[in-house]
Length: 494
Image 1 (cartoon, helix red, strand yellow):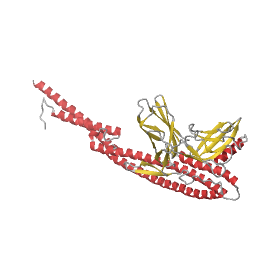
Image 2 (tube, helix red, strand yellow):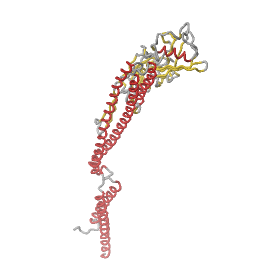
Image 3 (cartoon, rainbow, N blue to C red):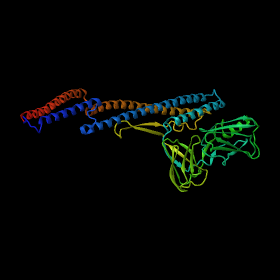
Image 4 (cartoon, one colour):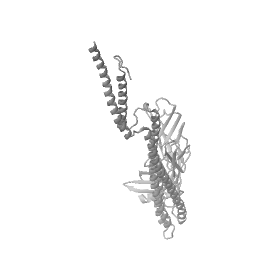
């Protein structure tokens, strides 16, 4: 029992301490109920907060991993859709080879069948090139290297040694840029006193509106997508043999010259030429294989690098005001140009060339669980004409049709195998997503035991400590009154 004292009220001190404690506990229970957390202040339960924080980070990683797996699945869906298109194209090409492998059609009819066959081959390439995830082509392989000094300035193109309006050589002076590919078509139509001419070389189209041929003149055709790329042919110096002044005769001469319709089509190739001095080209993973021309021009203090494959054109700029000896890295589309003491001060228009070689597969990967090493890769096998073994195939004769049909059979098997591989990877990703969902649920349950409020327990504690707080406050008030009564007693005694 505590002695009664006029100067020290021990009972009120005890009552106040318990009143404050009960009030704190009631406030904590209120906080837990309103926030849903055991404590919003980690310092009150540091161990639980630390474990809960780790589990929260893991849950975040698992959620993102599930999104990554879903994105890979979507990528596979895009890929298999494109491969189904490739299958349909190959099926149609096989039907054409069967039709051409019959004496029921003659060589003239086979030439017409081959027109569709070649366009379908171009569509195979186009599908492989345009099936992209972001900027990455899924079925065109991956860029392995950029080979310099291939050259695309001095081009050569095979021409038939026939007696007509053209000489047996192309014009080297006016032929420039990227023209690699097989000549698949050449057309001439009248346009008043002029002629509209179109020549298709690979996936590139060269065209121009020109006057009638003149002895010793030059026919120059410009790439419709890359104005700096052109191909030119010489007319005979003394006459234009075989040209009768009509679009039909002009077309006949041109098609004969280029081998269109003869079964021996012309092929454009690149000759050797030096790269720009002190420029190293690196191809990015999204770069397509093939030949490229790189040019540099300067205007004021801006130097512009331009890279083109004759279909796609990319540009990148650099500030050339600081120094005539530049050390810099310039991004040009899917390429990176490393400049080492490059003289960009002169206003020049130099063109040189390089090629990009691609591997036959492209690997796309993503993290599909909580740790950085938990990755899964999806392999896309190149499905362009070259990788499918269909380059140069035609159905202009029965023998060619038989050879093309054998190649198409192999190509169809390759496409089917790719679809099967991607389908298996899709199944793997589906199971991985299911596993991630289970892991998320288990980790969330574990986190809950460290961080989440037990509603029933917190409600019970709130009621308990609110009651105790009220009692302690009442007792504290009683203790204060005891001191007051003692003071009144002393006054009466005095």
